[in-house]
Image (cartoon, rainbow, N blue to C red):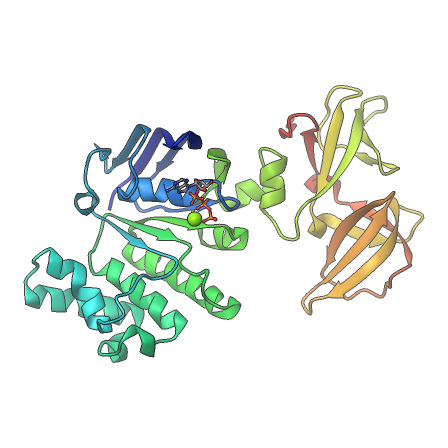
Length: 356
Ligand SMILES: Nc1ncnc2c1ncn2[C@@H]1O[C@H](COP(=O)(O)OP(=O)(O)OP(=O)(O)O)[C@@H](O)[C@H]1O
Ligand SMILES: [Mg+2]
């Protein structure tokens, strides 16, 4: 196991600057998730750690050793890809043995590693099958097995679950977490699924356009997003954002909303400052129209466990997620009451969080 340090790393493809100065320090044994929209540079960064892509500028260190010029094989990392990249003409056992055979590992030792990995992943009965004879989830496990047999310092995962159906994805998510708890191997996991990131990570790195927007523990990002991008990316359904103007005329700071009405501000800022008031759907309650922000119910969507209610407030649609079954229907007049202690305030120009 080893720490991974990414220090001021840049990457150009031709004239396009795709990684634009990234610093991330991943501790020994940590499970770090890189998340961000398509094209933000997640795979490129992972491939640079693996040695599959040259590092344009800056430094990557694995276990304290600079690896910029170390070939992939000598980096002691194992990568699991989205499409599994299994060899179709080889059995599961041979797929898992292959890297060790190339490394001229002794036969008995290979067998020992493969049996151990097969045991961990529940592949014992499938060792003589070919990839085409496996389900998607089983193939995914073989791809993981191929990484495990090498007993690397670092695991790199590039969207390994994106080809699986929703149910299997949730199950495999748990399996990968359990595996990490067992092996404690430093892991870097790429996804664009924020729920995967929230549930699996010790640390999440939110990327956009080749830079890091915020790094932190999942609940830190949820509770204190550094800007409107992270606020919108983490959490589902996404945070409601209302444009407004901060006021500090009264005893407590307030925000006058462009959609009409006003709310208690979570933090005091300059009088007249243009702000965005953020409130997550799960922190909005519905009451009668005489209290809270006046709105009209547009859609009611029960999901079973809870109910999503879309309300129109001054021409803007806000989503509320309610855990109780609700009696309201489209067309009802309601009052929306944000939980002031869970609200967020951002500068409208820069998008940066305004904190006390
Ligand atoms: N070999 C390449 N040559 C030129 N441009 C590339 C190359 N590889 C990636 N890019 C560009 O670099 C940017 C980052 O790509 P990357 O694959 O790292 O994104 P990503 O965050 O992994 O996206 P996704 O979630 O869609 O997988 C994209 O704009 C992509 O078009
Ligand atoms: Mg990618």
